[in-house]
Length: 151
Image 1: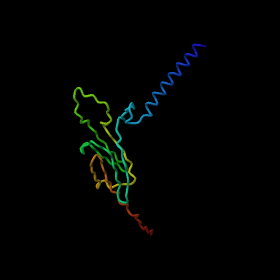
Image 2: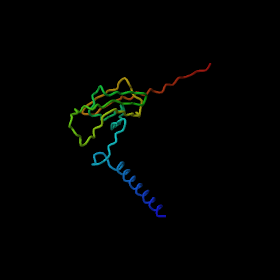
Image 3: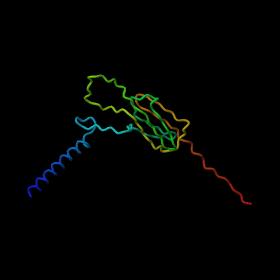
Image 4: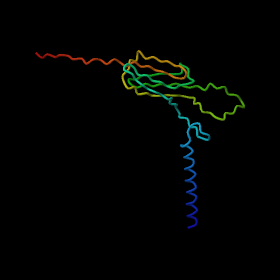
């Protein structure tokens, strides 16, 4: 009986320890001291999408990029923006980082567009770390009626 009580106590201790580890993993947000830093394999940049009567505008935060490092692909109503954010820091022997929060590496964001677009008239601007992709909506073809006569 004493051995069973000790085993139960040990299991409770392990469970408590696992719960504390889990709380540390999920409860501390970025920037909090001691908070974990897990970086996804592919960075998904923050993105806003809005539309007007004539166009769809996609705004994407991609600070630290050069225009040649960004690729935009359109496939119907699906737009994929991908690229690579290179680490341009100079690394010196003896330099010890206390905090590393800037993410480097591959990024990709897939945006489902709310309407068909004219792929030949897309414009792209990059300013102050903000990528703006303006996609004119494709003109809606008027309904065509054909009169059929039977002889």
